[in-house]
Length: 174
Length: 410
Image 1: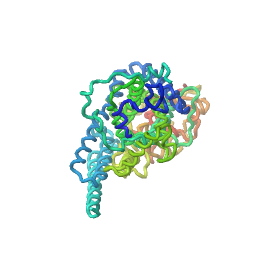
Image 2: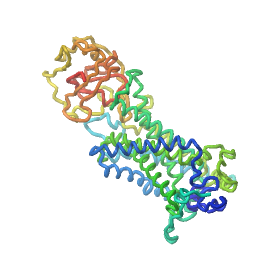
Image 3: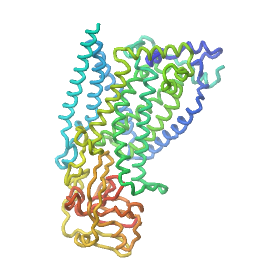
Image 4: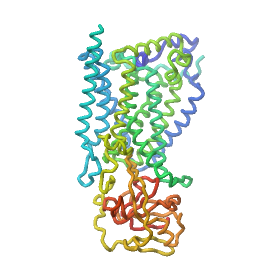
């Protein structure tokens, strides 16, 4: 069962059937309150909850140095940046690849676009932000925009060669 | 038998009508067998290590800059802070591809149906929001901060510090909450550990998914390669900002050791600090029983020392340089103070969070701590702190105060 199957099923009714007299069991081996084990989980859960509480306490006590509205915007916004932007774009690209690319070329496409994409994401703040300043030539000594384009083109070209070779070899073998 | 708590946590909550179950909520919307317990656990292990390293190194940096009474940071080895802070930023950058891969692996769980089938599912999903929010926020704001861009609306250092506690705590809670899944996912395939807590039917289902992942159109090997090369590419293109042999290779790094005025990068320029008109009226004051008020010529009459010490910026870049100047300890002794007196070093700069810094006893007494007037063989230029700057071993760059005008026992 993949995670997709797991989340599609919601509650696993088979489990309830396997635990006599417990219609609420979500797992035949572990109904909700038997999730006390394994014992070592509490070595993570309890200190973890303490740390979360300490962080929340610190944020609440930070006053106007950390306005909670600004903090909340970045907290939720950073998660949504992935869930609503990066992941859908990636899945859209996958959808295209599944239609346009022959099957043996797809691993190369995934690796190439993943590498080029993550490099772009990491370089983006340097391109979107205030960037290099004339007053401080030691900041951004490289032309990051140009370098990023060159690196991405090289990565994608390498992936294209790999994908083409894989496709040709697969056809010859067939 | 089910207890009252079982019935409460496991109670079925009515879901939305099936007619709303569209798009990613449909069964089968995410067909890849790489969305699996095994892949999630294994990427998660690396990501957990990365967050642990970032938390510990970040905490060290925080404690050095805001030391509580019990904390002592040594003056040697001189390279230690350079390594811890270099790791903090390098590992944080490497965690970006890891987090993306991890979130991709578990993305179908975002579209669970029904969205919250029971109170326990609701609690679990809210805890995941805390985990993903804190983890993403730390990486996003961290990178943006190294780009010297401050669009946050909060003080970066304060927000990043407290959110780090939430992030590491949420990671720990997640590891505990997912203990059985992690145990199975990290166990070798086919071993009893990989089937722990499962019925034979469930074991067979998971094994089938992992088998399918070996031969799917994008197989496990491509998934692992994409993650590994992503981490490698990000590291290779940025780590040269602190690991100088790769300075020429790291084409996306915001700094390069050896590039800057007097062959050393600068964080804050003299113009930005508003210290551009240091004239002959300049005096360096050392407060003490025998108060000193020194001109640059007076300072030149003290024994001159030369030390090779790194500047290690909190932003993750660092570079070695050769500094010339007077030992801080010599000046303290001349002013009638013990050599290990804790002192505050004050800049000519009028504002800014880092106008002053505290030199704790280990650094005050270190023979390598200088009030420097020269850098790499020539007098300091204004951007490096002309006329006088502090340079001490094993300290963050923000505490290497520039344009020093006063030293006071704290």
